[in-house]
Length: 352
Image 1: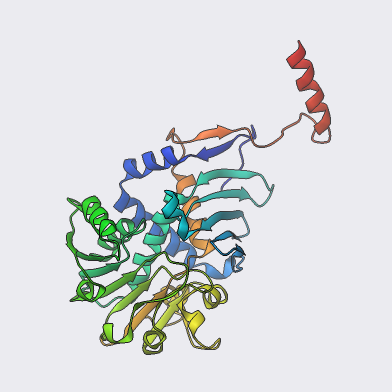
Image 2: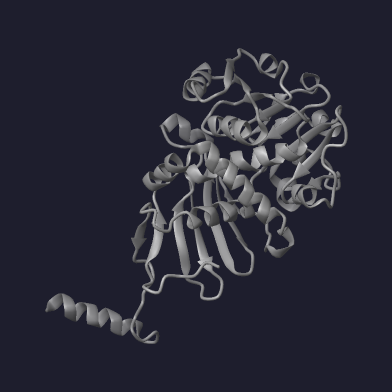
């Protein structure tokens, strides 16, 4: 069980220390371990508080809060999504998160989550594919080669045994960037000049584009039987990547239906269109892939429990690591009723 520090100092994991943690553990191993942590929490899904994320939308982006609790520990993530940021030299997505002790309300850890979100998103994608993709899948098409693409490719390599990744992006520079970053990391990387070319021979198709609009990255005629589709990019109202007809041919798996029906690919479908929650597949309450010709679709929008799992994982790695700073975030007067007196004493000490 996590407990707050008696000296009221809160561990903070900065971007620099998160990078050091990833390098110390190894990106592939860390995503595999994150997938294990996420699966463990999905298996106890009914214990968690669950709510669609609280979103503040504007014409150019969205700012969201993603809270949850298992009754002992509380966690939330602050995250934005602003596709136009790239033109300004800024990240499309930035995030930070916090864990707190339910019994006291005291924070346990504050962490950057821009990097951690990329890691947990890829880990969740590959975890879903472990349960849903066709047996023996070794080739994945990666449509959209932005900030998430390398994480996705390496997570699928580590967790699902993917050996080939076929890249396509409307911006050739993004594809060159992704191919360069993946060079020498044990994957056969195939840059392609069209989405159709990238999908040739791929048993898994990942879409991860950034435009905040209804889009058709995949048309119905592009998708043959027996594949697994990992739809990552559609994650807010009015943003999709797949033609509706693909959805009608697919067995659809989601994280939390009340959120996915608002934000995911299934916002294109009737509100009562059947979907299966991924945690039910993991616990045996519902079937996953039924046969070799079935199209399975993981309509991924990201859910708070995944962030909770990722934050708990990072917290578990901090002891004796040196990869954090202590922040003086919590007022800690000698007498809990004498908060103002603490200020007076500080003034007297400063004047002495």
